[in-house]
Image 1 (tube, rainbow, N blue to C red):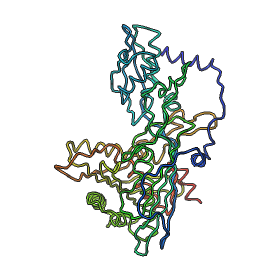
Image 2 (cartoon, one colour; image 1 turned 180 degrees about the vertical axis):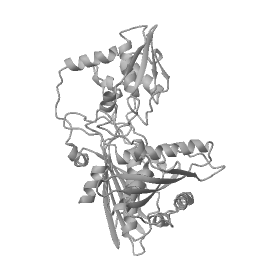
Image 3 (tube, rainbow, N blue to C red; image 1 turned 30 degrees about the vertical axis):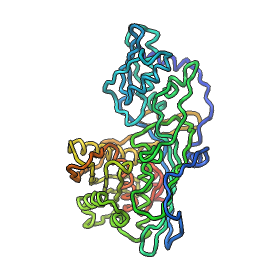
Amino acid sequence: MAGRHGVRALAAAAQWDERPTLPQQNRLYLEVLSWPRQDVVVTEQGNGIAAGVKNVSAGYVRPYQLHGSIGPSCAVAQVQDGTTTVWTHSQGVFPLRKALAELLGQGDDKVRCIHVEGSGCYGHNAADDVAGDAALLAQALPGRPVRVQWMREDEHMWEPYGPPMVTGLQAALDASGTITSWRFEVWSNTHNQRPGKAGDLLAGQHVARAFPPSPPKPGQQPEGAGDRNSIPLYAIPNLQVLHHFIPGMPLRVSALRSLGAYMNVFSIESFMDEVARAAAADPVAFRLKHLQDARAQEVIRVAAARFGWDGWHRQPGRGRGFAFARYKNLAAYCAIACEVEVRRDTGELSVLRVVAAVDSGEVASPDGVRNQMEGGIVQSTSWTLSEEVRFDTTRVLSRDWAGYPILRFPRVPQSVEVHIVPRPGQPFLGTGEAAQGPMSAALANAVADATGVRVRQLPLTRDRLRQALAA
């Protein structure tokens, strides 16, 4: 409590030099397209993009998003006999030790990091930053353990965010309704600035002799970062995928769960529905038509069958959506069907049921697989319906849960089923983060099916839906 009083007293006495260094929020995506970039060809095959009997194009955007860990970050540090010990819930204690050693001007052998359970990271939140704060403060009080806990506004305003992204897609269809060419572009910053250097810690950037952060770098395929899951698994003869890597950002960014896969799968699978509509094809049949991977086809068939896709009956205000991806194109296969209800007058959206199928290879713990899938579905629902960092030209405005609403219990999907495709004897693929992308697109596709209106800007908030429906 004394620490909180001290922080408040300092805040009241401080004089801030604020300058308008942030873009206007309503121009964020235009700014993203205009920032300096490095163009990387992720993949290219065939003869490039050619006109077809029908041509379809669309673009999608995603805002800055928080990790939204319900518990704020915390660390304890103690200096004893010249060694600094830090108890931390960082996801990477060895890279953190290296960063802390540089921050303190000590050798690695003089810093010890011990992992303890704390609030979930879901990527790279402020767990490492608060460890840096505690380590610095502990130097002034040798022998005494120093506990530092960030408050809610600290976490929301200073943690590294998931970066905004812009995608653009083009596809051409032949007379049989088959995709003959596909072009995907993604504009994105780095998705990984985890500590390894002192400048990757917030404290390292604000000490008297500041350390520079590590230079941002694009990810490397096949896993990728901003371009993760940018290559569709569908068999398309003429294909081009471009990553417009943006080195600089006005707000600090790093890893948020699934990195660029959430947005890239959202874009690809939303677009697949738009292209299927142009081809006058059923969305599930259209996906199966363009897949050669037998395991991908099976996971789609299982999800569609368990949902009752072919026997589904339309009701006023209700819609269904479908999406599929293989996470990183090398991990678990995931297909999701969902049903929603949308009130046109208010934009209120209810997720009535979600049916997922997953192929993770051989399964050691079926309950663990279901937990991963259910957690990913709920988290993705929150991202897709609610989450967006708000700011003006001088500061972040999303200081608390009122300014950054996350999914509450009344909006959680009313029913979630997870069906595991058994693969005994097959290599383990891993299920973590497999559901986030497909869930976002299945949800958006269901909204478009229910309303006849396609909203391409995340999140699909009540206000955004209401405005789209009123247009």
